[in-house]
Length: 397
Image (tube, rainbow, N blue to C red):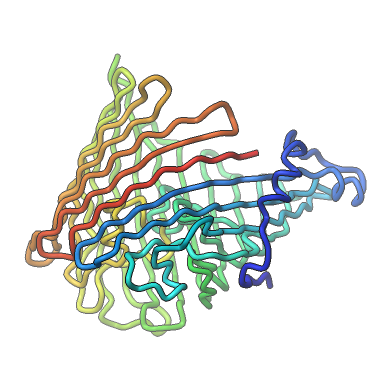
């Protein structure tokens, strides 16, 4: 089983040396030697500064980090291929932040600890019609990553040790099954689990795509739960205007030793439109309450939801209602996005607070990108006022 270890070296110099080799696709090979030698290297680097100003903590966090991923995928021989990827996250200046691993609790949290890790290492088999099988440590992202994702915003990625099968034999249908034995989270924790992931997409409807899913998470503790849900997304072109919509409902309960008080639901209603390159959406998302800990999504890319200030990574016991409005588009090739959130409890309608999120990002060709991002959480009756700012540059080959 792949393991993650404390950071013994830097990957960035090696990545730079291989940069010129990172091009082209990986063809099928006639021999094992050709498959091994005829593969494709990959390099993904992101340099980022993050600042956090949080009421109640006297010092601001300043995190200047470099994330490097260096991978190699072999060619395919008799339907079999392999991929391995290493990941290194390094603080390139004084780590004046609480990484949740460095003990610097006098600073706000920036969850990007120094680490070197095996990020992915799997075997893949594609010898069966319309089927892809992977075994090993791998990235898994389902739908919008609301329930299962890689937490790609953080420098250390979340990946999953186990088995996945993807089948597209039925018309307009994608079936995904996964069995996860270990979660490698963004803090380099290895979470023992015996979890099943079942996910079915049907895209044959004229009005959108229907998704059914079941996530059976045996986390080896009282937080173990199962979630069953339906998601519907679609769009309709109306002359110069495109109507956008999404509906989702899920029910969560205890599973495999989980606390029997776990009993919450998830609801999403989102409508929007796109015209002249501008997209606007209005949404209402509810993570329901129960007598234990509220509706939780432990394997999700949580940063993408309920505000970038990350105040609701754990759903409060009284649940969470998030009414949000987003407006985005492009100007001179720059992606622009503004989001406003109004947070309250599901039980009792307590006002939690409000938040503004702003983003500007631009890609240069296929390989380079830069961006800035801002989050400002104004607390009412939950957590404390928090302002976050990011600026980054990336390259990918």
